Length: 250
Ligand SMILES: C[S@@+](CC[C@H](N)C(=O)[O-])C[C@H]1O[C@@H](n2cnc3c(N)ncnc32)[C@H](O)[C@@H]1O
Image (cartoon, rainbow, N blue to C red; front, top):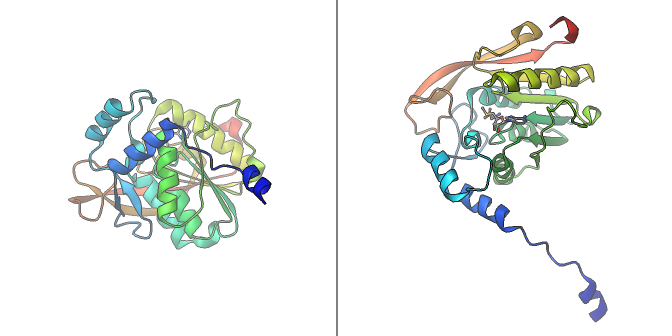
């Protein structure tokens, strides 16, 4: 008996940098939900610029990218709403949320009955946000910071049935790489749905419109989330489906 106790595995200690990121996340966000997707609880930030400054002051060694994970973007809210209202799209399926941010879409997919949900975002703080937010909603989401849109990525597309992405076309270079990745997913047989508030880099010629929503957003920043108590305006966000087509023709 003594021997068995001595051989029992010890709990793994989290590295200091990860503990610092989790503490930072908890200190600079508060539980909230958006009027458009009230079913999903998210820890969100209040204002982007002070949040970004706090990251630079307190987590100086991390990559310097804006805290997109601190807000629920209109395209993501549109896809999350669509998935919750059409659970048959994901129920029992293996789902990937690409560029997950806060994890709003991944959490909606898990709540709608997906068998497995993976969420990828290259920002390490987003991986923390997705994990903590999934836990707060009582759902399982496998969060990863691996950049799977890289051309040399060995991501196994046969491991997923449905790919969802919200507000991924905000950057021209990312839009090109993400479009190529999503087309590869489509060719591999995945259903691919995208939410977008009308950005210029959206490859509309490859897409079929599924649904439009007027998404309430903060009056002072139309690209960030609105918590229920904010001063609200709204943005038109569309859910698109990537059509099967000849990628060489795009
Ligand atoms: C505008 S936010 C949208 C977040 C979320 N989908 C939503 O709708 O609320 C875009 C996200 O894309 C992530 N991102 C940028 N490049 C990426 C890449 N190559 N792979 C995965 N995520 C990426 C950013 O870190 C950021 O969290």
